Length: 238
Image (cartoon, rainbow, N blue to C red; front, side, top):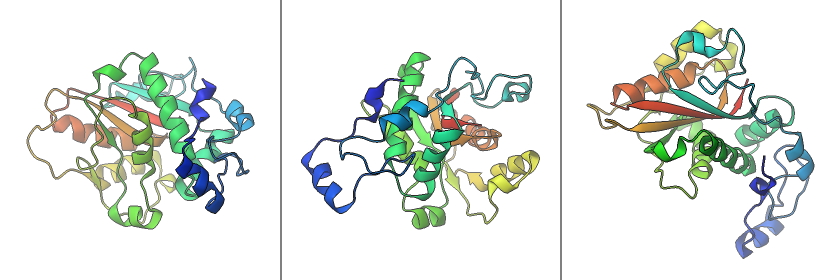
């Protein structure tokens, strides 16, 4: 992966803010210069997605990958394996307010979609939503942050009003695969009617691809709104 991905903002605003809020690497937590996004050492340790990731479902290639379940989406780009240093970066993004990881993985996903020769066919991007309560508590939606950096420099608009999420006290990671599927179908919904996405190719963005339940539920909603196809992008895949 191109090391230019970790170049940050070199503007005077970032320089001044660094005195008040010193820049930290999202992977190891160490202090780093204001104009970079992470340590070069950490960046080199990320297990980036390779030829062993299925381009259809976004999971590691094996007999039981998600393709056997005929996912609702057409393709899925994964930036990295959800392990080691990458896992730490996702954790920092979700729970430590370190948005540097969103820039790194978002840019990597943009490059991956370009390699797959699909980025120019995308009409709009939709980040997987959080419930309003969850977003108030965290202060941001990590999928929206990924979408912002993924679409930077493109003409792809980001829409956050298409899919919504109900608040749930149940943590997805505590559920079985079948229960995760049912829960995803319950908590994600849309208030839109008709086919406002008619003939569009929609990019659906999330942080981690685990069982595919979230991407499947949200892809189904997008298809019912008329989307011709859904392409997914995940910062990391399990």
